[in-house]
Image (tube, rainbow, N blue to C red; front, side, top):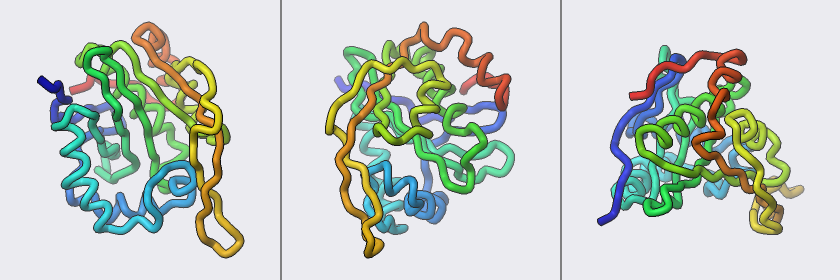
Length: 210
């Protein structure tokens, strides 16, 4: 029998991680059309509101009920504004491992939201869901994503050479594929010891998760 993640929300003092809903369509589409998102993800460009709606109403629910992963909308606690997405994918319920990725909207960068959301997700996975391993993969030149991995205590395990397709703007303004390396990171339950305290000094303190 396939295991699945529960349909829940997780909160910190600044953020609420909740299921995506149809009210997020416009903000999700705008976020996914950002230059940095286009460069470092495989999200189709341009990303339409129809694409956002399909993600919210079809793809995300199917991933969760199929046991493959879960997508969380990252929203500000006070304003309820969508500021990003946390995605768990390629979940192996026997090994109790999953791959974590994150996207932060251009209007919310520089606030530490990616680290905060990733950390509370990891805490929930290890404590509530009894997971034993989280994996992250960052493109070799995506230093912002690598900094998030380091902040939450991830250990770099090595490089997958030529395993990533990133994108760059061509002279005519279109996107062109660029092959690069993946850096593989892992996070185990014991890696989180002390990480919450370090991040709390930087931007926030973490409340209990739901």
